[in-house]
Length: 313
Image (cartoon, rainbow, N blue to C red; front, side, top):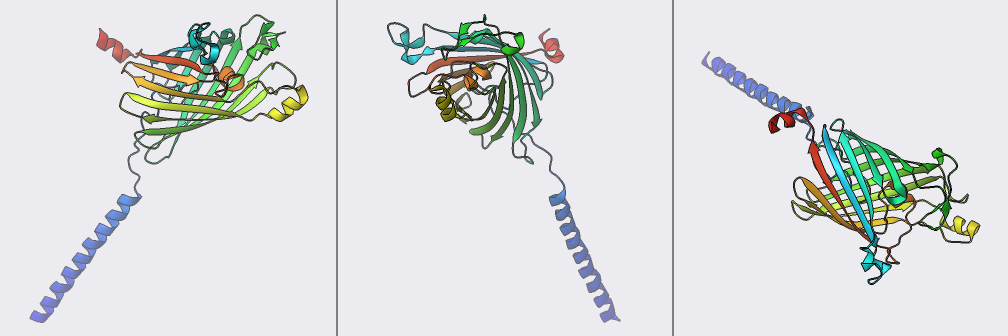
């Protein structure tokens, strides 16, 4: 009888241990299969612009960005006559507003071809611990308001016969990833449609692939670079016209300084324009010929939200 009781106790103990072990296994499996809380990546880039082009970043809801962009003349313009380009200037003033945390609208006015640009950007996907990159879509319309018959940078004369001919449209996908606290990169497939080009041998449609990145030197300072490669048939153009294709790919290098309320972007670029029509499609400068323009962007962010207004009273 005693042996029977001991055997029964041993069986109950073993079964209890097995059930406990099985529960632990089940809990471990459930923990592995249940999705973790999504943590979104922050501050892939410091601002909504990298140098000339856009980043995949947007701004917070009810926030307003004021942009001042400035480009001097080319450094190869001489010391005595032009003080390495500092005697000349091109400027763009812009505003962009966050309708939501993922949607912004903007407007700007550039002295290059007296251009007004209107744009919007929406962040579709966000990089997180469960998704590898951020995807934003950008679209803009630029309006050339120069008097008809002006001479372009390519030395072609441009005449307009309707207001529609003054319009240029740009569409972009901005695919960005923050690889570490120091390194961020993005690819920018771009399509530009120019309603009127300067001669019949140029295509109204331009495809370009932009790429850019930044390296964070410290909490306040980052190095940045961007490049746009245009898919144009230069040989066919030269064969038809007898002259080289007048426009070139854009390459820019810069340094960003974050002061808290402002972002200062200092850079050297072979593109003097600050709207996609100018720095991607109609860029006449090359680094080989020292057509290099020193410039800067200054961005100041203002909060227009009700909560912040209450705090300030």
